[in-house]
Image (cartoon, rainbow, N blue to C red; front, top):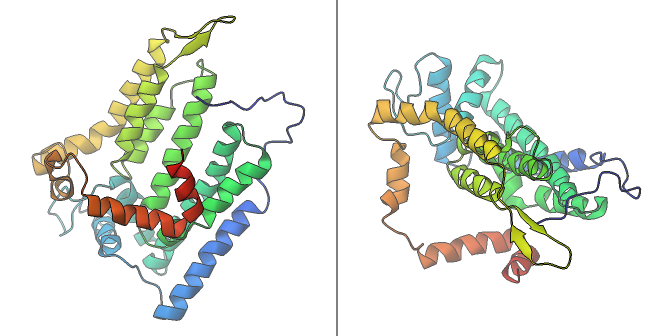
Length: 294
């Protein structure tokens, strides 16, 4: 449940992104970039995966398809959308590493802006929405990811955009059901976006109404937007899924089997959970404690 923002609220100022927001996010990225140049002496990436993305993108730009070795099609990329966006960078003059970092920064800035709009859509005032955006633009791992050559900023931008649009479609059911396909596009950046697709479709079925002094009752929702949204999501994902099947013999990329283990481990490893919580806590200790309190 959420409290939609009242458009006709006279106390509301114009719903514009604060002027300081994007420059502040850019400054945070520049600080990390300056630290990289000082410590390393040049531009680079911190992970092997970043260079693997570029290798796939290089071959794609050269007309060799989605391959690591030229001409040998493989299903090793779980982020085909990010690979496709990196490919045109090889056609630009200068360092592809610099262009990749600029692309990551651009998506990070866009994600911060969408985070502010999402806060406003959830009923937050301009101050609290600004605080939410500040917490995002100062979260160390998110700023790091903007310069890492990875698909994380793209996924955050698309997933937050899909959630924002989903809330608006919930408030105005007559709108075209575009949130679900946008979340499906986010799944082409990181496969966990599929969970957002499922949750969005399920949430469209949760329609409640309360009569005067009566209990909150479920009301049968309009099924057409749900069906249309699901079909659009299927069409969005059909191309990559069919490619995985054709090139690799599986509906999923090979890296899923290596990392996911075909769902053999239904309960996460406790040491892994401890590590993840540690990452959250170091980046945002107060929010981590508040999340534990609900």
